[in-house]
Structure formats: C-alpha cells, structure tokens
Image: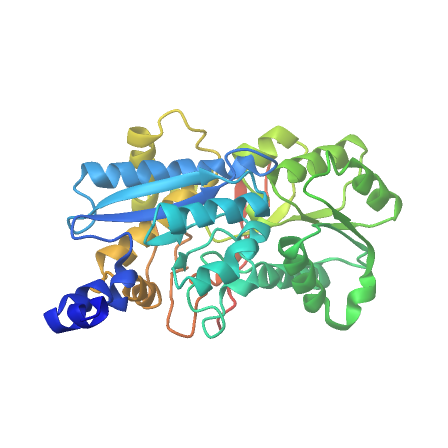
Length: 397
C-alpha cells in the first residue's frame, strides 16, 4: 500500500493534507503572530514613531491577557524605506516567521514592492500605512486593505481650495518621484479640472536626494504664489525651512503625512511654518481643544504608561495608537480566526470612532470598500498648533 493510500485509509490524510490548516498559520488557541515592516532607519525614519507605538500597544495588551485569551507576538523589522529590503523582510516574516498576517507595513513604494506577493500568498496585508489609492481594490487584491484617507482625494481637496480662495493662482508642485508623490499630484491635477495650466512649475525629487533646496529655489524663481508640498517628513522640513530662508511666501499646502508638529514643523521652525495649510483626519495632540475629550485622555494615559519619554507633539504617536486600536477592535470581534476569517472581519466594520481621529470621522469597511477612513478637514498652522476650519469633507459621499 502506498503512503498516500495508507494515510487516506487511516484518516491521517485529513490532518496532514488539509488545506484549511494553511489558513491558520501564525494562529493558535493561545497566540497570534503578527508581522510589520517600518523605517526605523533611512530617509523616512521619522515614521519609526508609528512602529514604536504599535510595539508598545501589543506589549500592553499582553500584560492585560492578550485578545480573547490570545497573546500577541508582534515582529517589527526595519526596512529603511527601501523596497528591496521590504521584500526581503516581508518574505522573512511570511515564510520563515510564519506570521498570520502583516499589519501597518509603512510606505507607498515599499508596500508596492510586496503588494502582489502578499496576495499570491493569500496572507492578509492589513491597514497598510500609506494612503495610495491602490490599497482599496478588493476584486483585484482581496488580501490588501488601506487605513488612512487616500492621497489622490486629499490632492483634490487642496486643488478645489485653491480655485475657490486664491485670486490668479500660479501653482508650483514638489513631489516625491514614486507612486506616493504621483498619487497626490494626479489627484491635485484632477481637482483643477480644465485649469491645469495654472501649474507653472512641477518638480520631482528622489528619496535618495540629499536636499530639495534646488527645487525650492527654482519654484520661487518661477513666480508661483501657491506651493503644493508633497514630501515625506525629512524633505518637508527642508522645503519649509528653505522657503523661509529665501523669503518665498506662497500659499503653502502640505500633505497630511508630513503635518506632524514634532517631526516636521519644529525642525523646520515654527515661525517658518505659520499659515501652512493641511488636511487632517486625526486630532492634533498639540491642539488644546482635545485635552478634555475621552479619546485624548485614553491616548495620553497610554503614552504616560508605555512611552513616557516620547515627543507628544509628534502626531505619528497618535497615528500608531489609532491603527493599533483598529486592529484590536478587528481581532476582538472576530469569531473566525483564520487568515480568511480575519480578512473578512476587517472588511466588516461600521461606524467605529477611533480615539485620536476627529469626531464625526469613523471607520467603515465592507467586502467592496477597502478604504476605512475617507474624510478630512482643512486646518491652518498658527505658529503653535493646527487650527481646523471649514467642514469635514467626506469623499465617500
């Protein structure tokens, strides 16, 4: 009798070859293994605050008994914001560490490098830390889901604001030369409609460039009176500071992902950052209006206990907390703890208010909607804090 026929005859084959077992990789009755990549080094290392926050949150959960009796093994690896390294680290997490899923892997170019791989492996690629529009394609990529508002929609919001509020706009755009920067750029151009010729200077930069000083000088010389700054924190601070040094004072629009007071505006200079406009969906930790709200108090207590020495003016700590709370909610309310089941639970969230997200902006997902947060509100920096103005703009409506 062959080994295969023997296994079938004895019933062992049902255990040995059961494809459903692959769906529980990284998951046991007492534990769940979760993987993450984050730029703890390199040009985007300002975002390391997010990885540090999630790690601290998972340690806190474990001290409290885990989630529904399961402790969390959270493995966060440095990818330096380098796509080839992200591929290497993701393969290590999926194939060697055998995690149940990846969570909050950070960066558009880095996630783009593992997008197809994660879906081929049928491994959840959950709540990725990037707002590129490509993360909401459940038919084409059913194992990848976004988290924050999409860059293209945010770009449209800025364009419409310019058209409605600036007389005779002459627009300059600085953008990172990859999917992240182009998503913002293309959304902005779409928002201009038939007035794209208002853009008189559009310059890219590479993430490997030392500075963006030459681009800022060229855009000032172009005569632009509107500046859309599509950069990650390192270059955002450089652009703000250089604009200030050369006396260029356009209407300055700064993409949300680089709006942190602590990691961008302070290094650039708070005086130099006055009057900058961004779109927000999170509660700015420097804004005193949130101090007495339940969400802020919850986050603040967490920071006191877990990250007491962290710079609370850096909104990335609030971001990491919001993302952690979303995953906690997802797993806590999930009865089918398989990879497929967890993905289904992530796609079945309605009306969830996260602690450090603006009141009135909630998480909503479904089997056909992989964009958890789709609303933002414009705000202006007054030299100390962001001040919200206007109404919440909901892209889902």
